[in-house]
Amino acid sequence: MYNNFENVLICDHPLVKHKITILRDKNTGTNEFRSVVSEISMLLGYEALRDLPLKDVEVETPIETAMCPTLDGETPALVPILRAGLGMVDGFLRLLPTAKVGHIGLARNEETFEPEEYYCKMPKDLGQRKIFVVDPMLATGGSGAAAIDFIKQRGGKDITFVCIIAAPVGLEVLAKAHPDVKIIVGTLDRELNDKAYICPGLGDAGDRIFGTL
Image (cartoon, rainbow, N blue to C red; front, top):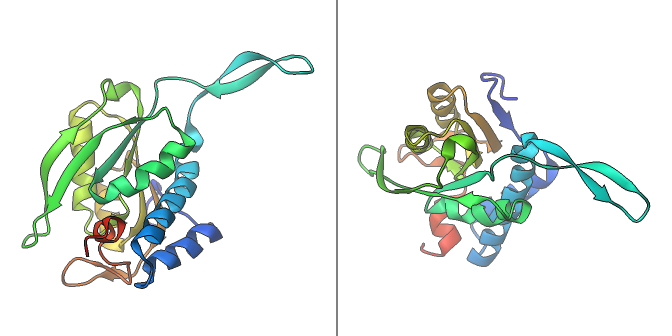
């Protein structure tokens, strides 16, 4: 857990640390960058999905009949924040291919650095589903907090936010704005620069995922 907030978990897995280093390297090409983002997302997803509910069902094994656990409840919803969040969807879907996928489009105003909504489409019955909001970078925290606001306005309650890299200020903004939301972070970086980019960071995640540098 992050010392300042009980609802924050910073991953300490060596594979996550190793793969984030690959993402940081400016010489990592688009194909490898995209692939590694997916791999990290799957590792973080493993942790995020730890609390999925279970029920016992009867299964006939080659040896005997047994009561065995299987997933219970409504199918979870995965909500990437456009556009960079799309890079994390595949990793989660490898673990949970039946997940419903919504989308939130938020653009950062380059003068105020505040998020502006341009698209929002959610699965039905959000209040009955576990919801996983994904975005590679948590910088100012504004986009993450706004995305969760929109989800709550549409009935979402059981929400987890997952990112690969966070800045301390962004993490504090999100944790304070939504203390009921579990936040899972791949690594916590040093600070934001005067353009609100995470340092040392990895640059613009969306541009590097989609090759639009």
